Length: 176
Image 1 (cartoon, rainbow, N blue to C red):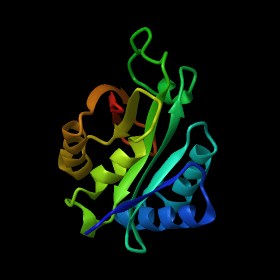
Image 2 (cartoon, rainbow, N blue to C red; image 1 turned 135 degrees about the vertical axis):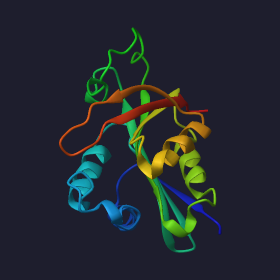
Image 3 (tube, helix red, strand yellow; image 1 turned 30 degrees about the vertical axis):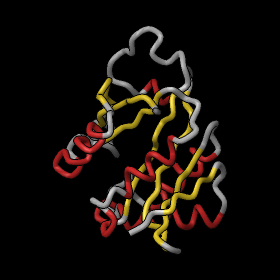
């Protein structure tokens, strides 16, 4: 299976449609939960796409979209940092960071390296020195978190649970 990454810095209608189709497939078992509903995700996606430094990589196998990763730049005053459970060290947010907002790959392409290729394509050419993400430490019985650790991410904080979301581990690594 070959994965062709296609880069987007704006959310064109075709890219949005392909991303939402892949999201619905990837998150199908969770779509009944309030934070994972397709319409809630679409609202979040549109908000993130309007924020500074937005980038999306859609991975295709031929004409079929099979995975995605997207994020945007966050700076010191961004609400992203205000959601952390513990105070951040002085200077931690001084430099912009790429917030990896979502990544997902359809089931037949899992375990093939497709997610890593899409992830790495998203980081290519980014000017931020670090990339951060939040992950449910229980996702896949911890497998998802271990995958991020294998990619060089390390936990630095957490996001408190909300009514619609479990407590998330905040992880970070260099972009290169």
